[in-house]
Image (cartoon, rainbow, N blue to C red; front, side):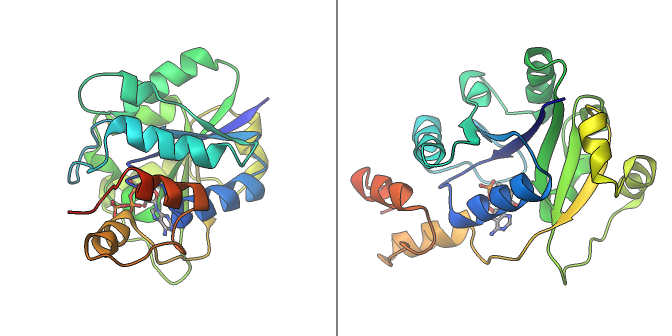
Length: 211
Ligand code: ATP
C-alpha cells in the first residue's frame, strides 16, 4: 500500500514552518510522498493576499527541491470555497488503493468540527494531527468522541488501513506564520530566514506583500 500525505493550507506564503512540519511527518510516518494542496478560497480565516496562481507557484518552487513533495492544484482549479470534503473525495477516486494521510496542525484540529461535513472526512482519509510539545489539546465533546472512536498510536495501522484513523504526531515547535511574514514585509523587514530561498526570491520578484 502506498501511503501518501495530503497537506492543505493557504500557503500565503509557503514558509519554513510548513516545510518543517512536512519534513517531520514525511520521515516519522514513512510516507511515500506529500502532496501540497493550496486552497483557492480558505474558510474560517481572512482571504489570502497572493493570488491562487502565485501561491501554487511558491509551492511548486519548493517542491522542485524535494523529490517527495508534489503540488496538487485541484482546489485552485475548482471554483468557490475550498471544502476539504470535496478534495478528499476526488483524491480518493484518483488514488483508490492508497492510504491517504490528511495532515493538519493541532490549532486547526481544535475547530475541525466547524469544517463542512467534517464527520464524513475520515471516511476518505486518516487524520494526522501535528501537536507541539507543551501545548495541550483542548477538545470539545464532539471532537473528543471522534478521537475516542478513531485514535490509534500504532503507526503501522496507517499503512494497513487506507482511511479512518486519527494519529497524533509531536513536532518541534517553530514560531513562524504567514501572518508574521506578511506583517514584516509590509514594514520592509527581511524574511530571508523564514522562507525557503526560492520563495524569498519569488516574493521579491513579484513584489508580494508590500504596500
Ligand atoms: P497565516 O498566518 O496566514 O494563517 P499559516 O502559515 O499559519 O499562516 P496556512 O498557510 O494555512 O497558515 O498553514 C497551513 C497549515 O500549516 C496549518 O495547519 C497551519 O497550522 C500549519 N502551520 C503553519 N505554520 C506552522 C508552524 N510554524 N509550525 C507548524 N505548523 C504550522
